[in-house]
Length: 376
Ligand code: SF4
Image (tube, rainbow, N blue to C red; front, side):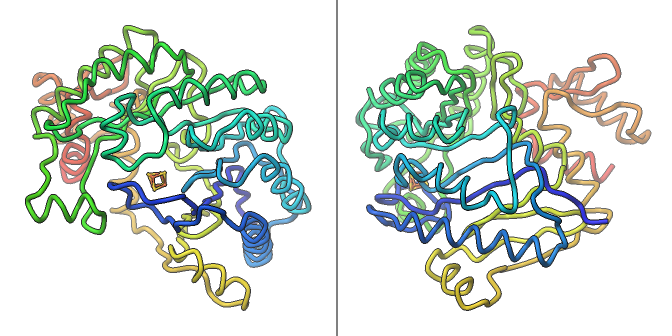
């Protein structure tokens, strides 16, 4: 029987310009071809449904439009998208429908149009409230942008707002991280996501770091900022339910939870990933290439893999450790239990009932701990 994916990701690849640190599948397009994009993802969905023998229409539990900058598509886009996909998939009001938005293009008109289409959760790319740091990043909004965008969402009736923040900026910027956390909390979002800055090789930032023209925060500063964030956010009533994600109780991201629980999902658009057990696949990253392949009936998938038992085991441990729920201690072998006891003694993990849960100090070492546990 076909595995039915209840979670849909749609990648909107367009941005007005590329931020200095961005390594996502992005095409610079100030006036994006929204209709072409909708037709492309609809065509991809139809092909996947045919190839995987998914019987339409099937119900979705979560829909996530990420990017890129979905808010560049304008006020009508989400209504058109929903309508265009409706022969194949549908989702009800109880479903979580998240759209990412950048403050400068998430206007009251866009908010109203999206709310009318059924969007009920917004993820705002705030990153910082420091004007100089925003300019350094190449962001187009100013420090007041997130407040205006959040107000637009709420006035339109979108009651679930998430804010993204980046930590680990170069020390020379003198960005006040505590002030950023305070300002984010003052906006009373339901959810906050943290991203540690990394210098990916192919980005302008990566080049500057390679050439010695820029220096990221050191390991100690990076760790200190993360730990301060966990402390301040928890004091403000946000639960650290995953290594990078904090939510008011009951406001966790249902879409991301599906990824962390290993549930099947479909990803549509350039660079999107999909998982229908036991197979994963991912699309070509370049939007013009993806579109041309799709329009000509060609292959738009860039790669596929079937995980072996070892890879699946490592992933299960890694996904468990990154969540507050942690791992079931009863499932660990003797060597793994001994390792977990060492972590507890070192302050990297806690035993909560039958579960082993990483502490924030443990989360700073997540990848290394997951590998060590998988090898034990
Ligand atoms: S807005 Fe987001 S997706 Fe677009 S370039 Fe900047 S970081 Fe990348």
